[in-house]
Image 1 (cartoon, rainbow, N blue to C red):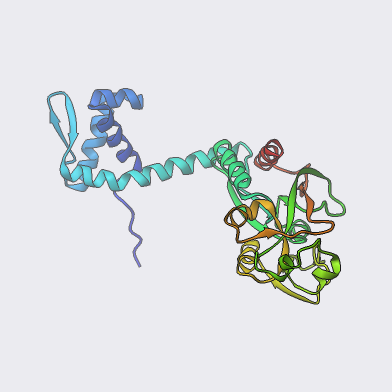
Image 2 (image 1 turned 135 degrees about the vertical axis):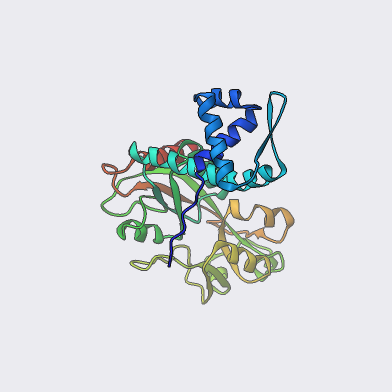
Length: 295
């Protein structure tokens, strides 16, 4: 099998783009900080290699031919991709990580998460983020297993140090037609124990936790908060749900807070933990600062 190599270079296409954007050979040479003769030679060589005219001169301006416009349009993403590759290589040379691995508990508010990631992308455009969404001890597993450089979890695992970021408010809710709403009085733990409780499965495997389960005689276990909200909104069971995840169902009236004698609202903390603060790279530290500032 014969390996085919391109006859043209991305540099030649970049020169063509500069000449077209600036309007002429002299102007393009100024933008590129090259002599006009060097620019002219580069484009003459490009056209000879392709066997096609790419430019036509109108007075002092250089314009693309129809063929040149079509080919340059296809070349532009390649040139931009190579420039991004070179920028990323320079960032890596300066010590910035190629990838930051982040594990975030599903309790963390999604709008705030997206805002933090957007700020990180603007500050560290050449570092990729591998985002892993976890529940309860899944954050611990990511740390102990070396699968995350930074976690946001519901506790600080033993042997690590962490910063408390924020508290998430949980509300006990059920569908308006649920039997618990029909009792017409403050609800007790015994009332809840007789009903179906919807619980979100811990994504961890080392030491999974059953936080939030009251020991109800019946429970349905699901894997995501979204599934839990869908079940509750359809009339199945009751549960404590993060308020930021049920704002719309509460506004629509498909979920209503339960009238509990005590414990209707709970607060759960979220912590920021670095796997190794001493060895963390500048991009990992930058992302940690962004989360601390946002919190």
